[in-house]
Length: 81
Image (spheres, rainbow, N blue to C red):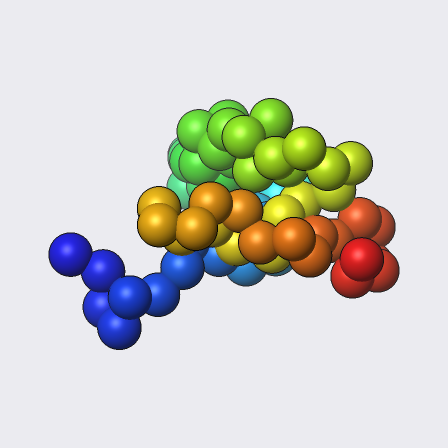
């Protein structure tokens, strides 16, 4: 059951993963902790279905609800369309 009938925010997922990928590149040492951080970041990133999140657009759709489908607005680069 969803809280407050909220949407799945695909664009927020994109912003989160931008941070995950930043961490993956920031922690570049060879010690076991940083190797593990990079592996976890890669695992998280690869679990996202980017083709689905794009819908019929050339960007990332703002969100999705089971009852309504994808929002009409989407992000491409740093611009909302």
